[in-house]
Image (cartoon, rainbow, N blue to C red; front, top):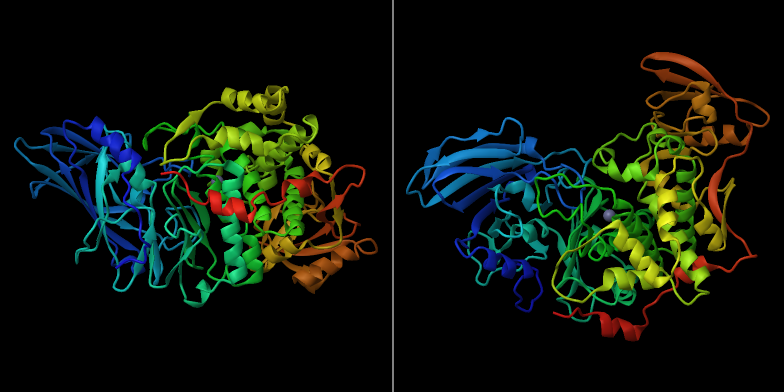
Length: 636
Ligand SMILES: [Zn+2]
């Protein structure tokens, strides 16, 4: 049984491409996944490959698209066994590449079978290879459950997958189910391996599907939660997600999918992140994110970001990331376009669709600008290197974050694309905007998924078509220089100034409550977990200068047991009394005196009335009810 709404029969683009390339042997690889043990995080898979006698090398996907790193969870692959025509055959792992397995196929064999189990972690950190199953739900990422002939390209090889779920669970996803369901589970129409890996399945005991456009088969919000209560989103929120779909249509003018499914996991026991796909996105948040006001604010940008990737990242993709292989390294040098522009557009779309109020949008922007402005690592690491090093930075710890710099091509990319937007608006005297660039660069022609790669020069050439300008220097100086201070020109030209006041922004308060931290990085220079552990310290800040560092535990502030309120009171009164922190550093206690005599400081945007308010123009909705009806349906 499936909660899927009826779909028009369509043939996948990749399957058509695959058939013509596999004239010799177009029999699909059979992949049967048994997820009935998902609640205890065990998945069983059986694969059947058409046999070709001789040496056969099978690969486990290593480089996961969208994760920009070698994150295939090879260490969690267990119980691997091979057979030929059901007779066991031995296997060997490549001694240098842990993701390759070799078998000898005996002459005359018709098929090679592989059986493997995947043990999914319980830890909630990480991305798609982090926790993906609870007692009530699971998100199936096919790349974790399969091998494929290493000499074949993922878009040239056909897979016919099936899936068995725990009793009573329902599923959703971008794959088309084959007609006629069997007792063995859901059988999907064969697709290319690339499409299969691009099409995860969300399943659960509590699953709800909401149509986001008049034609319910085109845009769906599929939600699986650990409780029925978590699925009860307000009609107002539902309307905002409908607006989001309309706003993407108004912004890009085209759609590069046959239909689109948001696969939203609501659980406190899975990893929390978003992962983009052409026709869906894997979005995982706290269980009560749709019904708790603070959590709802914090997830406002997630779905707009991931959906934007269908255009920016999936349809248009940096050539060095569109390598058509799961085994070869991807290069992240253009991630400031892939992720930076998506971060900018995701926040803008969240505001245009009402998911963020204008005030919340500005608060987010102020928090981003303040954080980037305090990245002391700017002095040694140019922004470009955060993109090149993305494959190690995603997994980097968060202590001394400002010293390391993390994946800053997201937040700083947002500020730089805002500057590109205000530059186009200024230089064209309001006739053009970054929206025009998006339509030209990301729009193309509507249709089924395809990839159109690009280079740095293509980005510059398209910007120049919108507005002749020295775009090459614009980007290279901002990307390649190592210097303190984040560029705030985009904010300034947008009519707003970054200021610091005593007032905690509502978006920060929401983050502090849900993440159980106290963030006083812009006064003392630390953020503190609720148990007193210092989770991060900003280099050169009063706390860091005094000798305090991440991992130490604040026990008392000015002689009184620590609490967020006690710490904040001490900062507020620090003009008349210096701050003393009693700290537990691995069982040894010491008092640190902090040289700070200022008020609490939190970032905000303040209106500069000498300039036009471009920022408000940028987040003004584009879609009218008429465009919503006209543009909701992609061309098939
Ligand atoms: Zn992204």
